[in-house]
Length: 570
Image (cartoon, rainbow, N blue to C red):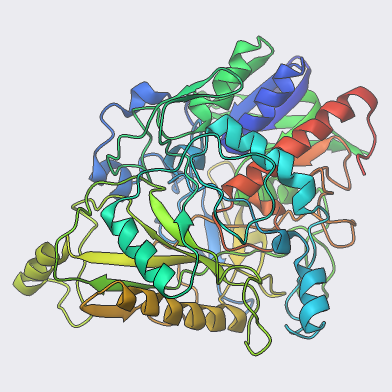
């Protein structure tokens, strides 16, 4: 028997970046807010002994426990879907801060092209550039509309960067802090790309170049370049994350409360509204109902979609008929690139998650696609994130992967190898979608989320083209041997790729093509808001966090308005 708790103004599900932004903004507005997080609470003090590669980078201590809940995956509808029993292709965060705790800190604004991709592509190349199997659509909001909210997140996180990229949308303000150090490795990339006629710039970073205090009075320290960012929390408090920024801000208002080990299993709907959520205390097993005037789903892409599905809110997408929107437009990212083996040694072991240089010459529609068999592109970067000893074993393709020769090559190349990588855009395809699995359930009795996903011809063509570009840059950098990444065939979850999953709860201008409107308000329940990268109708050529955060700030503004007058915000 569930215990019904006292009603509040807002309940949020998840306390990563999106949930943190929500609780901070809504509590500052005077609303009574409860934040539910299925993982544990934590702070920088919990990371004091964090430089343990095996514990955090190999055994994934900060990630979701797949023995409790996972997803099933298949490449196509005729293939049996099987549970992901070990983390691989992507890493699902858990606990206060979510993936915002273990991220690298790359903080981008999607390009103006991304938000109007359907309109701009059709205008320039005609409506048949991609086949009708690709479900391309505009987002229902423009870059210019989001620009103030991009900057608000950059202020909150103190983002370090420089406004020298000619391909970006117009900025109203400079970055809050200067760019990170330009190391000899980055200068090597800068020289090569400049010589080739490209425009390199320092990567926008949530690892801060200098100490900073944000607009809410939260201090963020300067990066120490220790090389332990991705998969780790920052013991210095120098990597902007929810637990050192937005969560403390919410707590200070006196209008906010966090509840940990609270796993939400249902959003309760009545008519055209939701009335609250049902959750389980994962420690005691007790069940609670938390009533609220507004419910905000701010957990990860997979969980937001799953909660809507198990709660029967919205129409499930059916690839056979094209009807329904829930689960539609699941996208990922592709990662073309090249590795270079050098004669000289370099300092590859120090670094930071976002210490890097980038070119955008091959991102978005910044280059002509008239004679190409794909659209969009990706940001091409060299990053100096710090080579750690267990997982860094750079060897050439013809080297054995075990034994004396492997060890000798790995040790020799440890400080003589550089990699250029790309965050390649992912276009939605009618056969890539999320749904509920009919065979497997989680530890709480709910069906697992099922992912049906494979790389497309668009992906493979983009990957091949951009890989050749990165090979050219690496050769210009002076590598003795250059190896482009092998072509992609079918998607495989075993090896890590990227935790940039998008789609499934997409935004748009109509309930006919989207789950939520441009304030991320659900079309079928006016007091339900669904926030995250699941809102993206496609995935761009950048890390999604900055764009997710901008959408969250805009949505928070909408929720405050809704709390006063109700009704649809569009």
